[in-house]
Image (tube, rainbow, N blue to C red; front, side, top):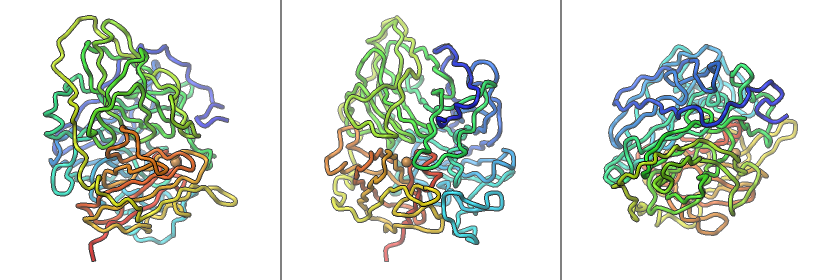
Length: 495
Ligand SMILES: [Cu+2]
């Protein structure tokens, strides 16, 4: 049986491009409260889908804030008790450890971990359980949106659940939303803005014939534990359409899927300019015809619809031209959504400057030799798990101790037959090399999530500033992260 519950009666495929693209409401206040609650969400035509939501919608509200402006978000856990404890991670943020959405450990409602060897009897502090949100409870996360004492880089980030063993299930049920950080440099560039700045969350899901989400998570075991949904949704709708003017648009695109990568292309074969990655603007735009994003990754593209006046253009995902097609890195093939381009000719005062945001000095001067190595394997006799340096996740253990104020270069090696997407919390990372070769221009910049093919070895550098404490490093294929592929580093004071 294919993951995704193909043994169950499946929802019939709706006609494509009927539904208008949903635009999640934008919250821009300094103090926000978001209930985490069940809601009936119109995903497919017909019956609504019962989901777990941030604030009643899927995706949750988009939070948009200026860099350097302290932001407090109170999440209230109003889901049924059976959901257990929750935790919220702002992916891409330079968060303090206590506001980073730690996965936590074992609790009375989650007394055993099937895949992770977690000692019993850990204190609430060492397990991170003191930072979880219990049913009926609430927690206020404080985000400074700063890095090294200054406003952080503008970037397209997202927030989602990160609970031990249940991240994949919790996000599948709906716990994901987008987050945009703006800053002066980005806002002052003559890039498309306002309703020509579109944030798109791509996520696949499977539904039964009553339009309810399937539960594809039982019985999955590494290395065959990647869940693919039958329907690819954009902002929570199946193959929506969006009316655009014949002008340039900035598309911020997030892959919030469990396992599936998308190789983004336009159906008219047009080029676009990639201007950003996970970590915001790149040093220079890169002209491309396709851009691959795996789970957790983001790209920002400027598409000029003036060349397609009066036409319909699909954003689609298709085969890669070049690049490896390893297991886990084979992109979805098909349309994602449709743009209906207005036929009127319009002036366009936007442009994409050749210089966007320079690389920070630390990235160019990072050590070329790795101080730390992380090796991904799969193992086990009776039950297989993913392993990072031979071990599964234990919230009380940290496997690296970078010193505050330093830059470290890390090696990550994939010794499995499946591609992985490694994500390191706390800071932005600079990709130095893949298998000893310098990266292509669209990876020669800062990012926070990295595709690593089987038998590939990457070198990445990160700078540890502002925050002491424990942070996780894990695969962003959500079932992999739930099934052992997660470790921790602890930022320590200089001795
Ligand atoms: Cu993985």
